[in-house]
Image: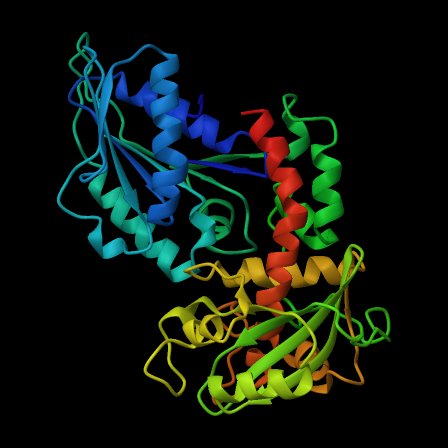
Length: 406
């Protein structure tokens, strides 16, 4: 709040109060003038709707300020004298950041975007940030400012812009999760138990660290993460499913207490082949699929979607309507490997084992794509669709702790 530079950065671990700081700073900025328009940006529309819009409204309620939220325009109009308005926008389509001028801008989780997308979104945002608001006493214009609040995601845009390149207009602070005295006493330990060491530096200590060196699944060891578990008669099976015309990849899991074991794999030509394989291989086992969300619209060989075919065949599906970030799926797999909660039967799952060892990052810092069907990335995706759902159940207890502290 006290930084005076034109471009400010708050780089902190989980639970450091980034969103709370953003909301308070945005409201303080709006108090400069009833004409002030404050831009607030989230990576996606869901985050605007679920996170920042409710947060700003809650703070306005707390301060006793009257307002109206126009959901169609995504603008919060205030009705108090001397206070400006808030325009809420997303970063996933930077070309849409047009047609208005802001006095101050506040950007949440900018580093979750790819570096080039973050650069484009930043350029578009500061280009809009040119509204002139004058001091009523001196007549001088107040400084336009743009602020970023994010957890470091490796050496990406925020590191390049604020740390590497810097300059007189750029200043930042870094904060660790442990700096927040209002968190539950076991919150930090819960995070430590849920992330591998490298991610702890970023997600707890708020440090910029290399998250894309070496192989993607660097925490996998075919020795330490090897499993001798096999499918037992009649036990529930959990299948991570990736769809590709000519090569659909399936990763089959069993649960053992708080661990999951990948105990089988198979490849099918299309969704009909998946159904045939399951019926022939596991005729007496209850099946739950964890498919690629694109299967709700994709069709490998039918007039209906792949996921709908699985549903019509009587199988339970656990899948979002839209896939989450790839990095979240990668983090989930690495975390469970490092915490010895994910194991692979390397004898039964030859393709998955070699895929985990071979996939690296490309020049853009994203997991390498190989092209074709049933390739390294496809097998790893099939594994990840199940694992990320399992890890979400572990993380739910941590999320509940965050909710309790507001």
